[in-house]
Every structure is written in structure tokens, then in C-alpha cells.
Image 1 (cartoon, rainbow, N blue to C red):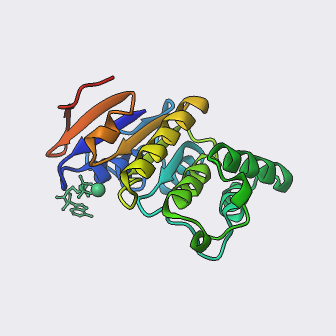
Image 2: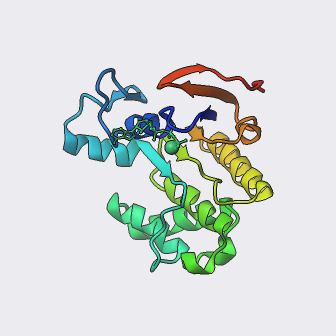
Length: 195
Ligand SMILES: Nc1ncnc2c1ncn2[C@@H]1O[C@H](COP(=O)(O)OP(=O)(O)OP(=O)(O)O)[C@@H](O)[C@H]1O
Ligand SMILES: [Mg+2]
């Protein structure tokens, strides 16, 4: 679990966009699990992104008309996974993020923190190798933010994935295993003590 800190405009979101093959870099290559995302054709890149990368967004980006369970099942459907297995997995993930009892709720019936939990569970549905998380807590109060980052650390370790989380808040960054800092588009050692 790596936290990325840095001033506004330093390039944190750009790095995540490039790391997740949402955007092609001007130079350099992106490898995930030994597979080069940058050398793949656009259509292949789309599949690789689905198979390898999970995204958690600032505003959770849930679909308003779908229940928590349906948001996760949609990922299974896009990946053409069998329906029953998809449902089992979705329910298990909702349990892991503490929402077993709220699987049938739509985003409008959930709190901000609960919506982020659904977003995290959804990002884990396709068994990603990498989880890319951009400012997941900016809409939450401090305690809720600590809970969400704690959950991300827990899920990262449980699923043995690599998580890159951007945050403005250095006290939240300190909950990660490593902290790196973006300065003018370059990675630098972080000015916060690493654990
Ligand atoms: N599509 C784009 N085209 C041109 N420049 C862009 C584009 N997206 C971002 N930039 C610029 O690249 C730089 C880095 O932007 P980026 O969004 O990665 O910063 P950030 O570190 O995520 O900032 P914040 O903390 O405010 O979210 C900024 O100067 C921004 O204006
Ligand atoms: Mg940003």
C-alpha cells in the first residue's frame, strides 16, 4: 500500500491515469504484473485494464439507479463471469467492506463513507493486480477518512494486491506501508516519516 502525496497540480492524478492505462504516456512504459500496458493495442489495453486494474474515485462514481449489489454484479457482467458466482463474490465483498446488510440500497440511501465502501468493493470485483485510488476521502470527515484508508490497507493485504492511493492528507498517508511524494511530475522521497 503506497500513498502518494504532493501539491495540487504536481501530477498525481495524471500518474494514476497513466498507470491505469486510461491515458498513454508521452514517454516511458507501464508494466503491470509483467505485462506491458503501453505496448498493447487500444482494444487489448481496454481488456488488460479490466483484468488488471481497479479504480476507486474521489466521488465514488456509483450509478444512481443500481443497488450496491447491482453495482458489483455489473462488473461481473462486463467480464462475462457466470451469474451465480458473480453474486456470491459480490455479496462476499460487500461483507468485507461492512455492507452485508445494505446490499439492496441505492447510492442515495447510503452515506458518503458507505458509498466509498461500495466503490472499494466494486474495484475488487475483477480481482485486480493493482488498485488505483484518487483522493478517496476528500468528501469525508476525519474519522470516516481514517476508517476508509484503514479498510483500503486491510483489503490490499487481504487480496495481496498493490494499491497506489493519492491523498492530500499526510496523516492519512502515514497509514500506508510506504509514502512517496510527487514534485513537478517527478517522484521524490516523501517528507513524512515512513512506517
Ligand atoms: N488533459 C490535460 N491536458 C493538459 N494538461 C493537463 C491535463 N490534465 C492535467 N493537466 C495539467 O497537468 C498538471 C498535473 O495535473 P494533475 O491533475 O495530475 O495534478 P494533481 O497532482 O492530481 O493535482 P490535484 O491535487 O489538484 O488533484 C497540472 O498542471 C494540470 O493543469
Ligand atoms: Mg488530482
